[in-house]
Length: 402
Image (cartoon, rainbow, N blue to C red; front, top):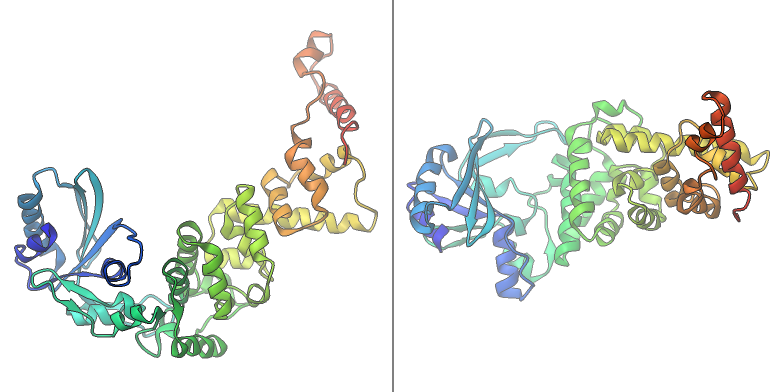
């Protein structure tokens, strides 16, 4: 109520609450879904947001008191303003954006953006259920694309026939909503996804230099996948993506893969980044990691796992180690790491039992004597000291069962 009064008193031509907050409010009040809270709110104004936000802040302070606004920061050429509020002791993020329109001259690249009206702003969104707005002054629900009816049908519907062509990450967002809200892609949107993916209308293709992939097939795709894995029921979300054929956005091998649930469960159990474990199922994991611009740590993890996989394959001809000390020598060689071994366990690379034994116990086994003990006994510093410590550790490892 305070926000509604503040919006009507801010001087803006039109101020509306848009997006997920409107959707979730309808789900809660009309369809009795559990209330998911409001971690952030999105407002759209007709006219430059930065010109109207001062009045909005003043109105909020008048309604809720002088301590309500904790931070106010303007971003970007279009004057989006981010407000951090404290309401009844709880933090609320409020994004105030200028209404805009978008066009995609090149599919999957970043769109061209210009000022627009509220109708334009709703028309640029991904699904009808996110293209509703609540005008703050009048309390009127604006639903030009039938989002309310789609909520009743528990379905996701793209706003137009080129939605997937323009921005294929909309499929990942759809999977997030499907998993979190219990929705399903409606038939025409499912067909749009199938036809678009089969036609692959984007200039970049698998095998081209990964760094040349457009934004929605590279960095934006990674960001959406990170949100999916960090915030959503990932098993349901990735299952939906695979059912829609959309894992092909990453790699056809991943679309055909049926082992990723086990791989991700093991990765989470072992404390590994789940996105790296998902990428490990690609036909060329390092190329996919480069295209998505995975963080350096995850890229290095994949390199270490591939190095270990190659070493295990090379050793198969001569027979894999039979003793704990020999497994330690293999798994602790330069180029390997505990995280690389953990990813090998998650991926089912090599025999799981000795890898697990090393991960859980053998790597913790130490020599019976320390370097200080040997020095106190009269041994001099140097290579011989290190060799003696390795021999003493090997003696203890020989007592370990495989």
